[in-house]
Length: 123
Image (cartoon, rainbow, N blue to C red; front, side):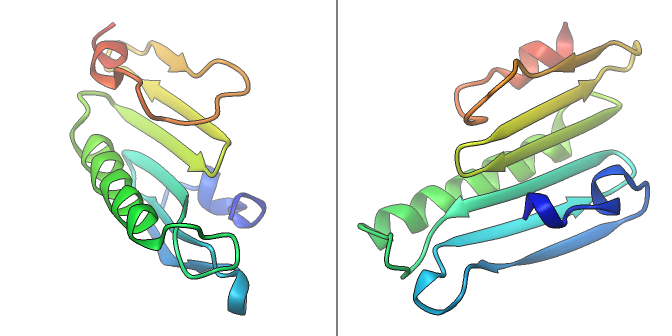
């Protein structure tokens, strides 16, 4: 997914795309890409019947929980703009506060889990 974001990552218009990642027996992830004037949300989460899947029920539950949680965060954080990317071991976030301050993630972030985004947004 990250290799195909292109203009969607930096564009200002509305954009939405969702689906499965992989081919045939290697369909091992789902993805969601959504941009609006206020947010950019790009997720690629492990899930599926691919040859790498060891526990489909667990992966399904984890993927749905993360989709719901990060979508809710992107919609409700008290910031001017939010970017959240979580792509199976590579993650990035950037929050633009209403006061103009920008909070970006540390280098080589592996996941958006366990980050207190509300505290970061409030400064």
